Structures are given as C-alpha cells and as structure tokens.
Length: 266
Ligand SMILES: Cc1cc2nc3c(=O)[nH]c(=O)nc-3n(C[C@H](O)[C@H](O)[C@H](O)COP(=O)(O)O)c2cc1C
Image 1: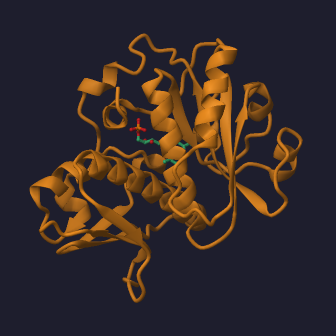
Image 2: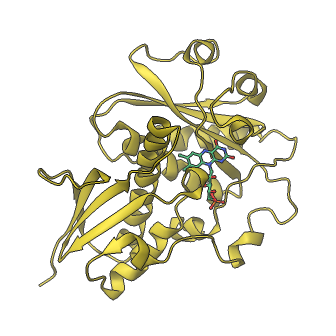
Image 3: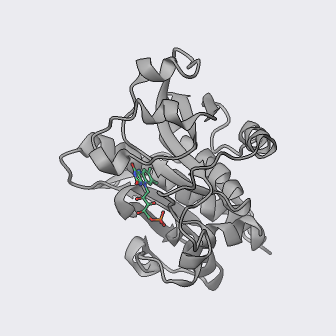
C-alpha cells in the first residue's frame, strides 16, 4: 500500500486489541519517527514512542474530557519549540508517521487534549524549551473490520467547493480530494484554499468556540496534516510544488498558514 492509499484507508481507531506490538515492529516505528519529513526543517521537534501505554493513560487530562481518553497499548508524543509555524510543522510530520503506521495495518488516533508537561517529563525526557503538542495512540484495531471496513464507506467530509475558492483544475481536484480525507479535531475540517492561478494560499478558518485558543491550535495542526496529504498527492501526480510563507496574506476570519506555488510546465 502506498501513502496515497493509506490516506484513503486511515480512520481514527479508538478501540484497540489488548496486545502489544512486537519489539521488531516497535523498532521499525522508531526508525520511521527518526526520518520524518518536515514542513520547516528549522523548527526543532522531538518524537517519542512510549511503549508502555499505561504510563500515558495515567496522565491524560484535557479539556475534551472523555473525547481525549483513548486507551491504547502505545502512544507517540510529539514536542516542539514554540516558533511561528510549529503547529502545522508538527501536523505535517505526525501525519507522515500516521500514514506509515496505516500502511503497516496499525490503527492510530490523534489525541489533542492537553497533557501535563511535568507529568510527561516523568515518562520521557522532554527538552525544556519544548511543549507537548500532540499525542497519537496506536495499536492493532479491536474492531473486526480493522482498517478495512470504513474504506468503502463514504467519509463525512465537505465537498471541494466548500473549502476552496478560485478555479480548480482536474489535477488539483485529485490533489484536493486527498486533502479532504485529512483528520481534524472533532472533524471540523478547518482548511481553506484560495486559488489564484499557480499560487494557492492556505488558511485555517477561525471558529467560534469556548475553547477558542485550544481549537485554533488543533486546527493549525489539522492544516499541517492536510498539507502533508497535498504534498503526497502532488508528488504522485508529478506536480512540482514549493511550500512557502508569503507576506501580506492576512484575511479576515482566517489564520494564514502558508502558500503553495506550483511550477508551471512549459
Ligand atoms: C489535531 C487533532 C486532534 C484530535 N483529537 C482527538 C481526541 O482528543 N480524541 C479523539 O477521540 N479523536 C481526536 N481526533 C480525531 C478526530 O475526531 C477525527 O480525525 C475526525 O473525527 C475524523 O474522523 P477520521 O479520523 O476517522 O477520518 C483528533 C484529530 C486531530 C487531527
């Protein structure tokens, strides 16, 4: 299975077999984590594989209450320095791991509830300038259907015209279809694409919520995830794209993330 297929197969798995992955498989996952693709190479990030999931289950709090509580045999915790673009940078890298795990038949779920940094520090040696950004639970899915079942069922996602403005070419219809499949906190699909010829400006839609700051942060992570889908799909379709933050792109009601510039073929 390639990563594009994994984009369509992945779904959030919240019920796991009470069974640890084999040591060899965990080692392979650790290797995958070491070589993740990043959006911004200059933003320092650390990725920890927590083999003993019980340790993480003990410290999960989080404002989403039960929503944040997913019991899994293992977790991945990603920490980062706080620097402009760090959230989307983490989302982008995290999704590359999630899709690799999906290819291995392993179920995953992003968990966005806040995590107590002090308690986390007892489990992994966090860099003192870092904060815990996102957790990913993983293990073999408990449901009999595993990762297969929902593959054939339609996803609850917005259609492309709902999150884009401007003319969408046939190739970009394909690319944006992969973007649609991205996971987001409470499936709120915050990504917005403003297309002007070969430049696409990408934003996170500002939502109203009592957990505003937290949701806004989760949404920047989700846009990073969506960008990874875009990057993979564009690669497969042999489109040369450059991802670059441009100046003067502020837009009311939106948070500017970055722009994608496609090299025009002659
Ligand atoms: C940044 C982020 C945070 C999330 N936080 C949680 C969470 O705390 N608990 C949970 O059960 N699911 C969480 N999810 C999973 C979403 O609910 C899920 O991706 C979405 O409903 C779409 O479903 P799907 O992943 O099966 O396609 C999160 C997803 C993202 C991207």
